[in-house]
Length: 214
View 1: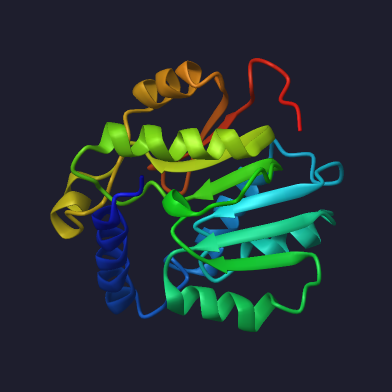
View 2 (view 1 turned 180 degrees about the vertical axis):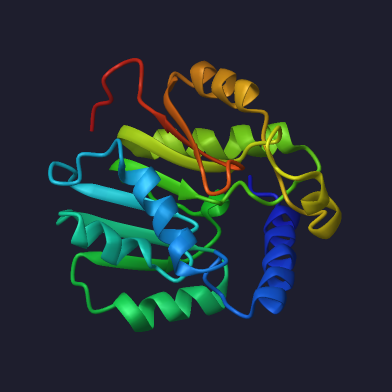
């Protein structure tokens, strides 16, 4: 069951963020976004990948990065916020092998759809009252949709400047050891961890312990 208040907290966080930053991209600028996309795709064979699910797809800017990097498969972007979703459809909706969905991933019924890769670049960045339970629920849904791998961006609790939490009290940052333990419990151990973007952002890649069948 989805916690409706969790979605409300995400909306409140990004309403404040967008008001401050003057954009709806979810990143300070496109240079920072491209650093994140490059880090996410470093472990992905985009030529071989048949499909990607982008959780928290924002304005859809990951899609042209994937296409320019050789990805020709099916792309599905799921975005909770209406304005970024509309922007994604306007910018990239002509791509015949791409689908943009305005929905809460935590409550979205995707049937038995599976994707080679599930990418989540910031969807866990908003603090929730029970962060561990919220992370477990979200990650379980992600790995249940993935066949080959998971690419996950989080803020590293040990590296985020303390002043950020004063400025953005709703910001979530993660203990990467605990996150690795959670992924291992779900049968998707962490296989790669990289820091970038001023040393506070971490990109985690995970693969299933057992082959994942369609």
